[in-house]
Image (cartoon, rainbow, N blue to C red; front, side, top):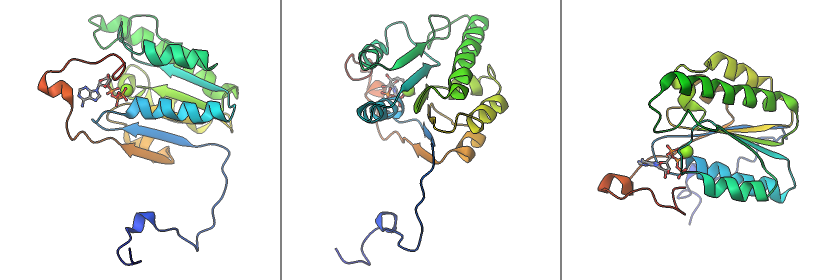
Length: 191
Ligand code: ATP
Ligand code: MG
């Protein structure tokens, strides 16, 4: 392929000095599948480098997530998940809000602690968008996090201030999803 055909996004930028930063903020958002699983895939890379890794899960269904949680725990990942209350099927919003705030307290503590080189805040956009946790507190805690803690946030409809402060933002765009043609969530693929 000639240089003119090469997509510009793939071309190296020779003039630009590359620098190391102590940590990054990454966001996976959008309506397509793969936000959480890509963040969990990054955990494998971090574990391979013997990084201490933490996860805080802000949403949970009774049956979902157990697969990746069990494997991550085996890998030594510190996995914090809401016990009950704030679930996809929740019909008790007060209890859900309370549980979301509990999850945020755990996340805030982990962001500041310096105990992790990778911290995944899975589905954090939902309680922010529902108004259950204060976005301003989240942006501030991420900005003031321990220097070496890379933060990976997932969830649909990432709020603009989160996008603004992030270094890397990916929007998963749904082209098709099996769910729409009536296929139920699949063990081993969806949870
Ligand atoms: P995954 O956990 O598979 O990476 P995700 O984090 O991108 O998905 P969420 O919005 O967190 O997606 O959705 C949680 C669950 O819903 C997952 O089981 C996922 O497979 C499924 N899902 C993801 N995108 C869609 C979609 N567009 N329509 C229906 N279900 C979806
Ligand atoms: Mg997800």
